[in-house]
Image 1 (tube, helix red, strand yellow):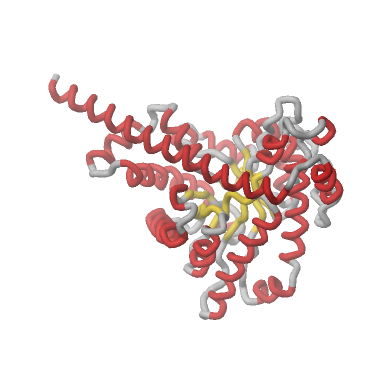
Image 2 (cartoon, one colour):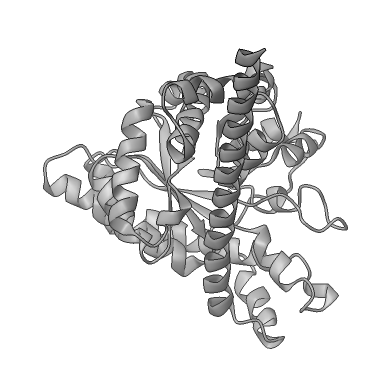
Length: 367
């Protein structure tokens, strides 16, 4: 049996960390659903930047939207919502069969809003309303400034994928914002069943320290951080506070493992996937990692709820001078900056595409 099916059977959701119009048009996403147990997907500015820049697939849609008066950011979000709505419809049977636990797609608010809670909330409400799909997560960064927007969005009934989390502490802060939003809905007499995932980035930890630690510690930091976070999440989901919410109809926020493609060419192609196999979590992976996983037929042991040896491993990193708290803040900041760069690149691609297509249309008119 393929390891993709094994993971699914163990209770972990496999989501694709990619979305392109080609993926939808050529039936590849449908194939991944049918053959590789994919039950959702995520997107981000970098993914759309590459998809639009490296293909002519979007040109006709861009031309059509230009004629409708769209440009820049508004044009992009219209393209993205079209793609993600189609993907959401493919996953809709899974969403309904799982009673809303699975079958989600994700769309990120503009990264330029990462430190502006009020504008983030407005954007989240607008995008969720425009898509008009119950299985669409709006992605909001779990930065200090993003947490109030997450709480308010949950209170407003908007499903949220909290992104750019790197540590146990950042996860717990995001979980607290989610809990407050749900508890406020209960107090207001509203349905508390609002979906959410908390996305913890893994491989970037190891990339950040690869040249700073001895060989024996290579590719171990991200997994140790994930194990520590999983222990905290397991304890939180079993707490009296959460049990009260379950009893009133609330839906638990699931952990999502992000950035699980292996960066080190010397390491296993499924290093993070195998290490982070755990029920009631999500692993969102790039196509290359998904295809690699499908060639394997075993997984090994599941992630221990007590964190396993994570604290011992983290103590070894501390002994060689790695400050986990400082690095977590740095990685979150750099992640936000990276998404801003991709966003600016994406807006540049949209601008150059529209200019080129306008010029081509003008030449056709003249000839």
